[in-house]
Length: 120
Image 1 (cartoon, helix red, strand yellow):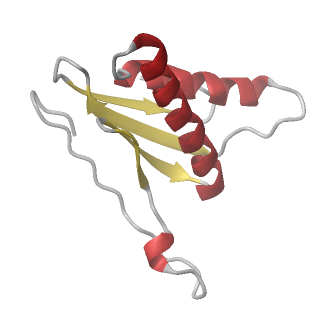
Image 2 (cartoon, rainbow, N blue to C red; image 1 turned 30 degrees about the vertical axis):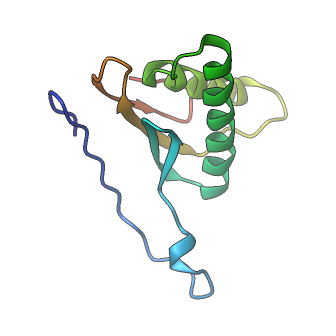
């Protein structure tokens, strides 16, 4: 839910296998100080995307010397998903994600991506 000056995100934890520690199952990840990502889908695919997104956030800050915008990192993740969907021999990412955070001007932003690489 996005308001005029606030963004709220909630996820539901599903039951996991008996041998899996429930404290290790995360559905919300912090990409940068002001950008978070929640997902629904495969945990392994989410970890790969989170690692790539965190790396892009750091390299953007080194190149531009400003924090990354939520729209920029959403476009980056959507491009990765779209590239894996259309490439031969690569399995598409099996997750949909919500990216939220605040832009440098303190505007709350909320974006959604799907496995095909579309975002809104």
